[in-house]
Structures are given as structure tokens and as C-alpha cells.
Amino acid sequence: MHKVKFLLLFPLGLMMLSSVAADAQTSRKSVSAAEVNGTFRMNFTGKMRTSANEIKILALRGGKIRVAMDLVYPYTMQNGELMANMATLDHEALIEGDTAVYTGTGVGNCTITIKFVKLGTIKVMQNGTDAACGFGHNVSADGTYLKVSGKKPNFEDE
Image (tube, rainbow, N blue to C red):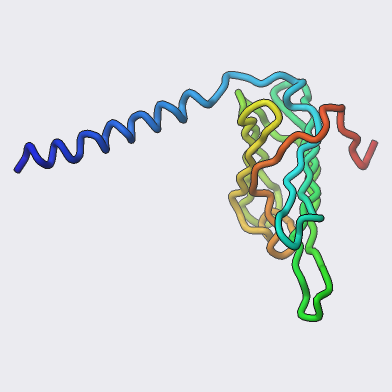
């Protein structure tokens, strides 16, 4: 009986260990300014394919980046008209290795993590509600974004 349990659980344990090792290997010690700088976009699909979330990122000194987000939550009203709730964010974030973290200063707990997954791709994870992050209703930064420009981004206040 114990041998059967071992034979069933051993392969499962090996799979778990290999997935942890694979995750550890995907983190990098650093990313170059050329990889960081630019404009990243996540296009919506289906009826909302004309809408997109956009993030501009610029490497700064001292382990920081500047992040400007233009985010939307597109939807269709009952009469068929397209509408969108929107959000903007323009702040500095700390970067260590291949991961940058922005911690909000608003009314709630908001943390946005940007992982530079591979050249030209970032994965963004939002921990906190739309309200806690100061976003419009249902607006979220979550998703995988692809680089659409490697040029130094222009920010609204420049």
C-alpha cells in the first residue's frame, strides 16, 4: 500500500519541483534600458478589438523607472453604443532584476507589478481594486503587453 502511494505521489512531486525550478530560471538579474524603454500595448479582442491599454516606460537612474498608463474598460450600453471607463497613472516605480513594482499612494492598497518576461513582452499584475488604484470602474492594468515602439516615450507633462 505504501509503495503504491509512493509510486503515485513521486511523479507529482517531481513535476512540482521542475515547475518551481522553471519559474526560478525565468527571472533575470537585470534588464537593459533598451528593453525597458518604449511603449507597450495590450489590444482587446472580439467586439472591443479597436480598444487597447497602453503603458509607456522609461528607465531612470537609481533602480527606478517611470511608468505612464492609459487604461480602458470598454463595454456596450443597452442601446448598442460603445462606451469606456478610463484610467491614467503616471508615477515612478522601483525596479529590481526584471521586475518593477509600483505601490499606490491612494485611499486603498494598490500594487502593480511589471515583469519583463522576454524581449518585447511585459506581464502586468494588479493587486488591489480599481478604486484602490484610482482607476475607473472595472478598469484594470492586468495583462500581457507587447512592445509597439522602442523609442523614448513622450509623457504628457513634457
